[in-house]
Image (cartoon, rainbow, N blue to C red):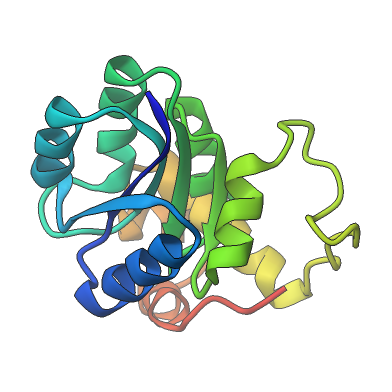
Length: 179
């Protein structure tokens, strides 16, 4: 395993290219894959110290890719990165083998700090404690957890939450509230 080899798996070509460029400036050898199959091909050819995996991609999701990465490169530090952050997906990513999880947008400094972070979940890289979540963010997290428990079924989730299906759909269509 090369500690300086970094795999970026993201179908957003602009983001992946910018991240790869920033990592290269920090002396990493970077490979970029747009999907899970591309990531597997790279991993068959090289061992990586780090991987940054997007949650939602065309085809197989990042959640489905993580166990394969963990089995085939057990020493790799894996970061799940997504624009659809929730407690439910964070827990699921960690269960499947991710070392850490960050919501987009995230810069290279945050990404490297998350990958090198101690697993205790202590203070952030700059020593500051995370700000408490807003009520809107807590609602979003709870909805995501219930949705995950019902395998993405919006109607079943709406029934459990006691709200109309369209109301739930509108809440899901909105970008999640920031902390």
